[in-house]
Amino acid sequence: MAYTIPQMSGTTRTTVTVVRSGPAYGAYQILHVAFTIAPIVAGIDKFFHYLTNWDKYLSATYESVSPLTVHSTMMGVGAVEIVAGLIVAFWPRVGAYLVAIWLLAIVVNLILIPGYFDIALRDLGLCLAAIAFGRLADQFHRPAYR
Image (cartoon, rainbow, N blue to C red; front, side):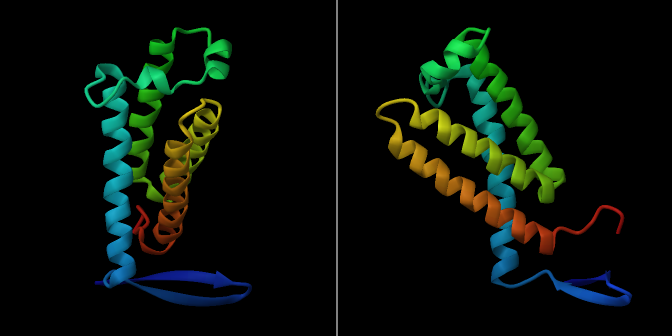
């Protein structure tokens, strides 16, 4: 499946045909699903602690500046993650970079907690994957007005 996008380059009008098949498009689809579902599931679980006790992942630095309790802060984090997942679902070209920035903030938080460097490294990898997803979304996400 392909679609054509008109583009302006200086004073020249050209068209670009985007082919929605092949390995790159498959990678885009996988990342789109992953970066939609994972933040929503993690965000919902911040309220229920079924997967883990998320409160232990808030550094003392953030805890000291937050006016809320640790659990209330993490519920706020969960709400942000749910919204980020929904933005990725419907507006991946923006949502991908929003998730990347959010993951970078999580990495900074985890570096401030001794013993969580392995999780910080994993989240840095996810941050880079979100940036790659954003690049793919620039190519493959069909604009809403089309």
